Length: 304
Ligand SMILES: Cc1cc2nc3c(=O)[nH]c(=O)nc-3n(C[C@H](O)[C@H](O)[C@H](O)COP(=O)(O)OP(=O)(O)OC[C@H]3O[C@@H](n4cnc5c(N)ncnc54)[C@H](O)[C@@H]3O)c2cc1C
Image (cartoon, rainbow, N blue to C red; front, side, top):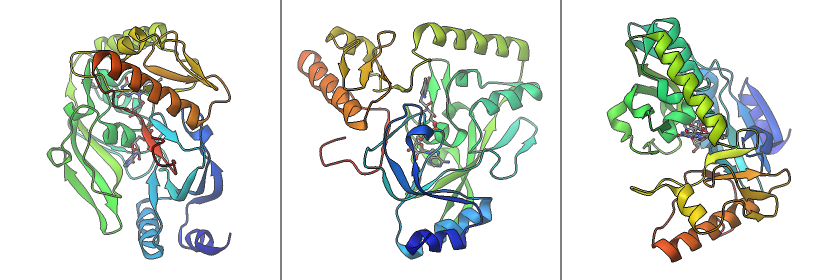
């Protein structure tokens, strides 16, 4: 590797992959490559990476499990950072679990269950990492990350440290992280309870998802937030877009708020569906649909 990519590769011990396709690292499987995808080896390595990025003036984006991310067809300039699943030391202390942000969100409930702790039932079936779930305040009708997070560990180019949950302003699918901050570990508080009942509730929720969501097709889950008192899927269906296809992308027949990739979808196809649904729902109901999905990379002006 040459130029700034060579410089980063020299300073970082972890894995550096130039021109790495990102589509396979997202659940909807669209979009172009990252200039450089970096997987820092450990917290010291991440600190070196963030310091080098600042020194070289490189943009840094963070990718978790890619379950809520739409990558631009033109890809992503600069660095894309992805944490290993076992990043940072994990600890359990009483009812508190300190877990790696790179770990799957499912780890929260399973580690809790192993210790006789419950309270993360809401996370059943949500794909992605704990870092992504924190950044999105992921949740379901059963609850959300806000209810369990006590504090998070953040890394920036200025250093690393813990931040109390209250400082993150967690709200419906919202978390205020300092610009450029990487969530490296998440501390969650669960409580002692009936593990068998907790497992059963989670299994029932996953079974319900299998019946009501197109889980066998690539998607990023819900496309739009539910407007207050309404369901985005019902609004999309009401304006006749359930099953509507543009290029390789379509609003799912099973759940109209899910856009699925039929095989060859581009980010432009996905965005064309987003724009169409927005326009029709606004025209008919006077409601502006806001996207839940996070765009990543270079989109043309007005595209997103
Ligand atoms: C089939 C399906 C069902 C879904 N169901 C639900 C659901 O029921 N409820 C729900 O809330 N969501 C749902 N989602 C969306 C998705 O699972 C969540 O938003 C999840 O929390 C995303 O995690 P991720 O690691 O994949 O994040 P990514 O998509 O990788 O990233 C999302 C955002 O988080 C940021 N981020 C990721 N990791 C970090 C980090 N370590 N530090 C700082 N920022 C970070 C990224 O920069 C980006 O802005 C669903 C998705 C799919 C595909």
